[in-house]
Length: 478
Image (cartoon, rainbow, N blue to C red):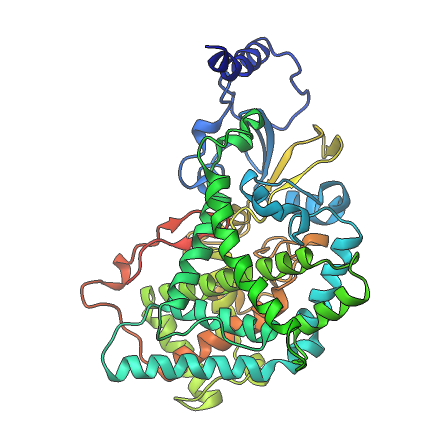
């Protein structure tokens, strides 16, 4: 009886405050009228980025349980938050799922802007994202794409189907694992790649789906949906793999000149600057976000090309003209493929890999235009809605890559009409690698094979339903 009362009491108190308006913030942006206790949770549905894009204009406030939430669905509002007032909005709102294994404390993606954040960001910039490192690792990307093409060739010769999402994931995973550990983590012919993909997918789903604790923090100790317990298991599996690889390297005298060696040297010289926990969580961020976002984009691109065969024909003609049919795409010549570049941009507009980007939070009360945003508010930038805003994009609900043939809009965080990688200080650190890898893989797949759907499926009947999580993935596989 006493335990039940302890659970119910916070709801009763919150209901009284909600009904009578005590503590209600003034001068918020417009939004739906909240219900007692739950606020506007009932409006989220199973595709929140879509349901929250339809009401109350470019800036919307709503109450999700106990959490004041701001949803930005216009390019101008995104620019204000991600660029003009970036410092005021750059703190992350941390989903309860990411408390598992203390991930948020050590994660580059979620820790506050601090000395450790700058150290990890510098490691990423110096060893992954800068042009010098990207050029130095070009041979690795070429090697992994050749392995992908060879796998697809064998499947073609034996008349087997190819799961584009799976093979693109394994290619991205093994590219990253060679940059970090100088070895493959997955075999495209075995189950390891499938298991790792399922594990990463489960992490993204758990981290992205609505969790009662995120809206009613009073339930943190209970974890009623079991999200943190499941996430603990998922993280533990991946971190265990990294720990084995780190211990293996520590017991070896052979230098590999990879990212692991760089990190171990920093750890030895200054363990307070880069601890083993920071190191493992950096690798976790890289492998989970890097492999899944890239493979998801490639899968969506291939899906749209199969739905629009005339676009695929034009892309293949361009590739054949530049490289000759049946050859691997070379990075140095990607700039000679404007049509392929438009396909990548249109895919990122129409299917941004992270529809809400990653959630932010206001550390202090902030003025945004004429509105007052309370301290502790969650801020969601709806990249999906911005990419389909009819005031920006003609025929916004159509996959129409010609819109980019005469446009200078880019995806690198300066044009806020198109922000699949975010912007400001928190822009995705893996963006430069992704922008090299996506056209390389997509172009090589198109130039080496004639792709067809399962005979049971017609192009225009392809299901584009998304499986919502932090990363939006295609639900159906053909």
